[in-house]
Amino acid sequence: MRPSQHTVLIVDDSAVDRRLASGLLEKDGGFQLLLATNGRDAIDMLKQHAVDLVLTDLQMDEMDGLQLVETVRADFPLTPVILMTARGSEEIAVQALEKGAASYVAKRRLPQELLEIVHQVIDSSDENRTQSRLMHRMTRNEFSFVLNNDLSMVHSLCKYLQHTSRCVRLADEVDRLRVGIAVEEAMLNALYHGNLEVSSDLKESDPNLFEETARQRCHEEPYLHRRLFVDVSLSRDEARYVIRDEGPGFDPSKLPDPCDLENLEKPSGRGILLMRSFMDEISFNDKGNQVTLVKKGTTEE
Image (cartoon, rainbow, N blue to C red; front, side, top):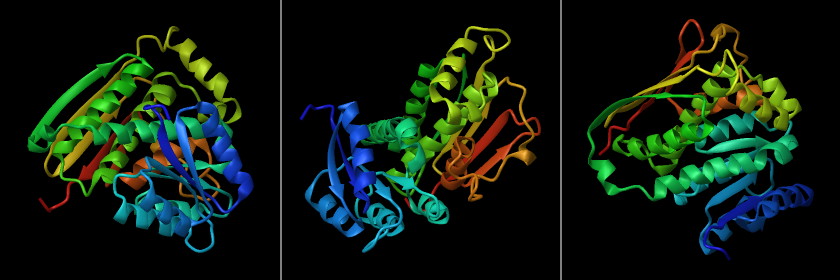
């Protein structure tokens, strides 16, 4: 096994879905895969193997995905869980995100989105595990960034924010990972939908055209000179992130409810659902081009 490989445990009682998920990850070449048919088998494997990520279905016999999320959060707190959601499991998916899951992907969109989401969660998790103990001694930190429409810089800043958030008293490393993912989703929304005005509908219908349109607009007017503004305030008691773009904005009151069963699997609701599930507060300005995310620290030292 190459040193760069990560071990992913796929949990699903459907042999067809296990083959689909494992086949997609095998093509990437960066993963060692373990397979389980239900939550109880998954827990046994977690006790026997060093697992970097759990990818699980929600509706299973013996132990379902929601119970598995709760058990992993309690007994294996450094191991993030991604949900695979199917029609009919939407309410359980929302509960699982609230209980500790790191992200989710709709089964019908596995070919288009699985690798991107797995890499996002693993990259954030790796960043958490390699941080310096020094960050725990920081008591307060405030800083601001102004970025051009550069996706690589957005990802770089997200990793830096993961690093600095260690001064905040959060429940555990999974909680810190979830905050990082929420902030990244907010920044990607500001870049793609705010500054570049690329619609989520295009991502659902043609992901490649979505990315190509975004790349082209990075070099075209009126998108070329728009910037992202990120203001961060960290203390032992709270993490506050304010992210503003220079796009035309939108009416926040017309934002579809991502928890609505009809919207859960749509790309347009994914980022908002994760932000609302992982943060204590989320609010938009009247223009809709600025979002504020707040995570409260725990009271325990």
